[in-house]
Length: 44
Image (cartoon, rainbow, N blue to C red; front, side):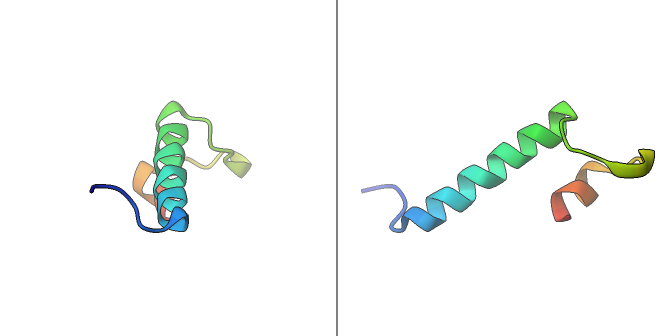
């Protein structure tokens, strides 16, 4: 059987995937007009 044993683990993975799509589409809120790289946004 494949899948996640804990709902929390599945939730964390989905949140990370959603965050990556938001960063890629430029939907992250960046204050003060500072350009932040994809990697830096992912770590923030």
